[in-house]
Image (cartoon, rainbow, N blue to C red; front, side, top):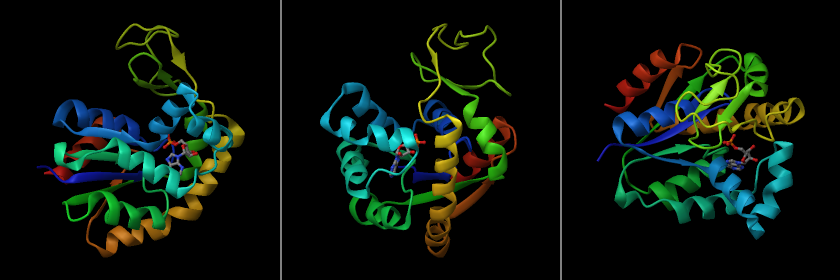
Length: 212
Ligand code: AMP
């Protein structure tokens, strides 16, 4: 079985785009805690109602809630996963090891990018509500305005938290929590840094080399 992959990086650093390629080209399963939480909001579940305001503001949901959701949605005996959006802090990194990954082989990949360019990227991000394809109006706009290149759906959405104020909060949260997480994986010898400002294809090559 391939090593479990933990994608670390700021919002907008390209984790979701690379995760989609790892799924289609290398057969990984993708688990994004942000997606799981957004599903709960869409279902209007109790959990969804609890986290909606927190997520719209760009703050972090509490560790216990997210860990429970993660645990309920992955089964490491069934294949290799890409963890996207988890861990967000050192406690989550430790909990991921103790409660989910345990002694299974894993690697963390850090999408290293200048945080100053991300705010503009994030407010221009759009996602196809039908197939999940990710666009950016700045550098990867759909060929026809408002129409998904991949599935021809016309449901290109902007995430509620991709507005200027929430983006500022999300980047601030990221800056204040990432360093201990990187040190944690570095000390275990499990961290690989990739230059996330390169083209998507170049980043994918680097990511693929890590997986081998
Ligand atoms: P993402 O889709 O990864 O950008 O996450 C969107 C939002 O979901 C974040 O801003 C948080 O509010 C929440 N979230 C996602 N993953 C986590 C996590 N591991 N811990 C806490 N909150 C999370």
